[in-house]
Image 1: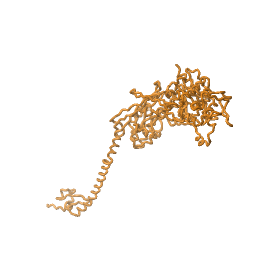
Image 2: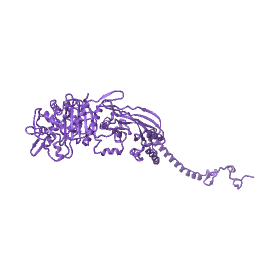
Image 3: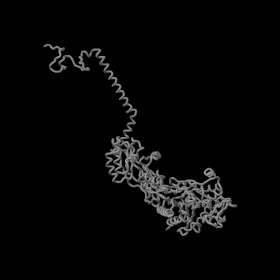
Length: 638
């Protein structure tokens, strides 16, 4: 039977391509279109209209993708490449070994011990807060403390930073092992061996050595150009701070490849660190310890709140001992002091963090008479033969200015006036009386400055104070009063509006001991590098001749007489000939006066100056001189 293409079979299954000769079925919606119709213009226009919309949409999408690709690869390609490399290649700082600090005989005072530290890399921490909380809760259980405190320690650091942030130091070996094992499964946590600063168990050295602590962001801005990294510890006070650059050395660096979780894979490159300088101090450790023991005992006996001792070599300004009482334990800071312990130190009314030796400002008491005497001799106001009759004080109009000794000292020259601390003599040569004109305020202040008062000595410790000397202008502005003769009298005996530091008193005593040279006091004698090269610290002269040698020599004689028969007679049987001056500094009508002693020995060729201050220590001859005697005996014993 002839095949009829228009008759659709109702039986025999679905229509197959081969069932329709010359036709290819195409489904367009629900319509079957024959090849012959596809050539029809209406069909072609409809098809073009439908496909062109898809074409232009695709073309637009292609353009957007190409533009974005160009922006990422060309415009910001270098930036993203650098970021990717930064994530893959990390720079790790190799901390330079900190220099060791020794005393003059080679005893170690500050050194390094092995330790472990815990670091966080914020950029590697888990993105989900829940995962991060799990990590820090586990860490808190291992090391102690609160979850919040650990997180707070790096709260100010950008969460995108890949610089390690130290959050805990002083881990025990057991804690370090546990954390290191757990850190293999944690993101952003590093446990690393470090060197921890440690100090000799001698708390009286705390104000000399100071301590190290974690660098703040503000400190980092100061040191970053010198190759420092933010997790580092730097000197915060004392020698540790003043010689930070020398002690620190030069950090090394290594480039480490890390994986996507921040775990180390391999070392790319490395530059070794250079150790810091070792420092050798002028300090005599045994003299320091003796001074500390005696000062502490005296303070406890007298219920004195504090005190200070300075011992230095008058030949070059080398500091042999420097004690400030009360002191503190600098080892607490090295290990990382708690907020509670630090607040306790700050709120302590005795101020153990305060370095009284260089920062404390006190009325000078009679120690200032040494300067008044030298000035009067230099200016011709007095001579070594000038005598003044002391009958118990001076009366000027309705005011009486007393001697400390009722009835006075009788006819007195300058040597006896120094030996017995005769107020009448210094009222006279300071402010004038009768036919003796006196120095007057301006010349008193001028010579005070010549001897180093109102200026920083430049000692290699931070936080030194300059002291104070008054002027007419200051009194008018500060108190609304003009300057009176009585003010000059008070100043001439070291009372009234005068403030000095124990270091300044030691330094001007050294001027008298050595014949007139004002040296810059210094704790560090020399610096040395591990290869053996040594760099001595140069002696510096502040003023070459403060006062004429002849004037200085008379003052020396007066100080020697004080030991032979005067206020410092308890020193008469010392191993060497000594010279000294005691002082009593009134500062409050309701409190005991401060006690001073300053002196030197041997008398003919001085090697050691000792200055002692005891707050509320009564008279210097009672409380301070006995300490000086023990120190001189130790230092000059065979």
